[in-house]
Every structure is written in structure tokens, then in C-alpha cells.
Length: 294
Image 1 (cartoon, rainbow, N blue to C red):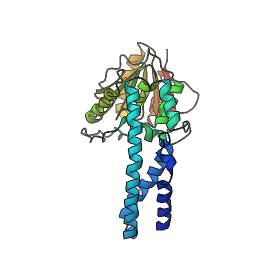
Image 2: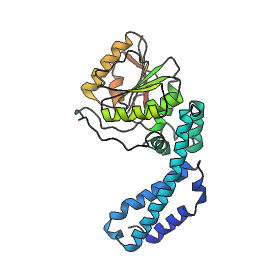
Image 3: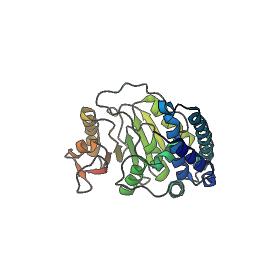
Image 4: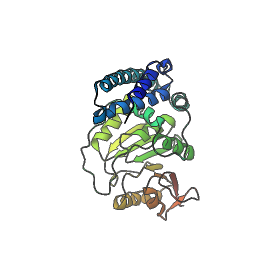
């Protein structure tokens, strides 16, 4: 049971913390908003159904709107900078450092403040409803943790000669980050039409001409231009095997790199035509990088 005095103390602390008004205090605002969202979410619990708590909820909602309004201004400015080319590459990395701080590291698990930052930057519109039924071996969409994209770019430096392909791109976070942080062309393959159109609209809005999304089944996609392929376990079993067979055909023509994350890494590691770039067993919570055997 929550203590109303403690709730009131928390709200007053947020209300009187003038530092939260500063644009660059995004991480602190995110923590405050998380606390406010919790207070608003528990309002339906029976033991909190009192007039005093409802008044505290009203205060929490007003504070939430105030802090969200600050973020809205911040991200509108960042999008404008990206559109005019002033917040890409090194500048975008510095932007992340300025608003979020350093990455939580490769050993971290789950999502962190960088994910909140990327969601607010890329996904200002409401997430669209799913229109395509999943097959049993297809995995429900979850965004790749943003820190994993930073780790990927550290382990696999991309150049203007590369075409990065995210297989199962969802709402487009990975290709969008790759497009902002590297000189590579970034492509997203997505079977859900609503997600694909949403991601393309975001890339177009940010004027990221080297980022594109294709609405297609991964088993039927054209991979002929790709040099680096990413899989955050969009599917398993026979679907993954079918996609890996297509990539094997591409590897017979040129050297390719496959980066996997999540449970699919075990299945990717079993491919004899791939060699792991590090002498360690695949792990669900770690990136795995493979290069095609020559």
C-alpha cells in the first residue's frame, strides 16, 4: 500500500525541481516521468480510491504534461537539426552523450534511458495496429535495445560501401540509428505493412535518404545488395532456416557479415558456412557476429 504522504513528498520534489526545465536534463525528466506514470497507473487500486489520492493524481497528471511538453520542444528541435544535416554521425553521437550520457554497456540487460530517447525521437506518432497475422514461428515485435545498435556499430564498423539490412525491422529503430550514425545505406525488411509504412514515414520526415524500408516476407526478400545483415530474432525454426539459405546463396557470391541478437544466435551459429568473429558461445543477451567462410 502506498503512503499518501510519501506520494505528496515525491510530487512536491518534482514540482519544485527547477533543473528539470533544462533541455539537457532529459535523463532526470525521464526518471521523474517514470515515477509519475507509476502513480497514475495505480489509481485503479481499491485501497487508493480516496478523494485525497485523486487530487494527488491530478497533480501528477499536470506535472506529467508539463515535463512532456519540455521533451516535445527538445525533440522537435533535434528533428529539425537532423533534417538539415546538423545532427548526424559524430554530432548525433555527441547528442546522445549530451542528453542520455554514456551507454549502459554490453553486459546490461533490458531497456534503458537511451531507448526512451530513441522512441521519442523517432516515434512521435502513435504506434499503428498490427494488420498481418503472425505464423507460429514468428516472434512478436520488440524493439532492439538502442545500446545494442551502438555495440553493433563498434564491433562492425560500417562505411559508405556497406548496405546494412535489418531483417524484421519493426518500427525501424535499427536502420534509423544506423542511418544517423554511419555512412552506410540502411535497409529494413518488414512483413507488417503498417510497421513498414510507419518506419518509412519516419525516415522521410527526418530526410534520411539512405534509409529505406520494404514491405515483404523475409523469405522472399532481395538480399543481393546487402553486406551486413542483422537479426534480432524475428523468427525461428523453418522460417529462419529459409532466410539463412538465401543468405548462404549471397555468401557464395561475396563475403557477408551476419549479426544476431537473442535466441536466434544458436541457430545461426550452427551454419557451417559461417564463422564466429569471437571465440565465445552465443548468448541470448549478447551480440553475435559471424562472417561467411571463404
